[in-house]
Length: 399
Image 1: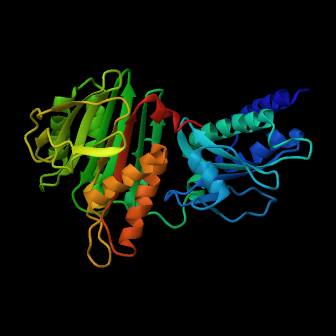
Image 2: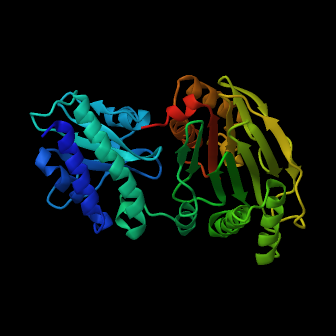
Image 3: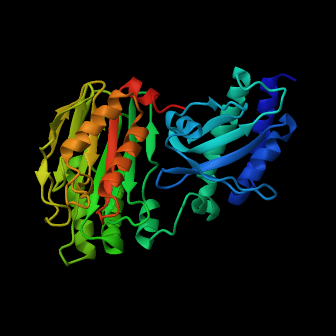
């Protein structure tokens, strides 16, 4: 039997095992499927703060230490979404679902398998691809996979909000969307959303007034109203009114949500947007921040009677990027009271984009920069969404 056939049999075995496999048996199932190849795997999941890769426990095997993403060979395999070989013959294989980075496989090969053999690497990619799908599918059936990804307890508000968010990264042949949310264990009212149907990409970034659970409840109603209206065919001008009505039907205390709602035609580059009291998105062209999109202004969601909003429009060029953010990013203050600021955000985005980093890694590094700036000082939620329009942009997040 050829090497390729052996990996395909292992893939079929893992698929068969997965149908009745509980979430906490995932690591065991992977190694059982690879046993005939003489291959042993340790599965790591990225933690919610995207700082460490944390191992899945497996009965009978000692639990390795978490792996740092920054400044390590496994971390480079994860951030670059590339198979990397260690000096001892181990392979580090990224785990993705679609283009959403989930973790890493540490693959120990027997002496008769060459880590530089492309058939071996292709086999590892097949297994890691299925593992990515299984992680996504199995997570909802238990608490174990959630727990592995956490370094400390999560607040009730964060627990609720994380279950509302779409996957952090999504890409097609021509567009890539990535988002990040901090502080991930104690989020307040920040959220983002996207949906691609046909050639139309719907986008939203939201920031509910207040902090903690009350803010998250407000944002939860807003994002649910937005999705409900969108899924019945409501067009962009009427979407703010649908959110207004939902918020006003639940509360009469004047609570509100700021946000940017947009639709982007990925064929023509036509971007339409409404800004409900939110920081203006930033357009980056040829790696440079060229303008803020200041049109489409209206009151924050929940503060009007529900009429249609003014819609602004712009045509993007292939290769353009759109950076959406909440005020918790630019207004994050360090111990001396200095704000992070929009110029610093734009400068860092330009530098990371100029280095050829994919959208999710650009955002991870932006988030780390905001966290380093504010240090131990208290801070508001900080959410960033980056949209890239080009085939090259989408290719950078491919496994």
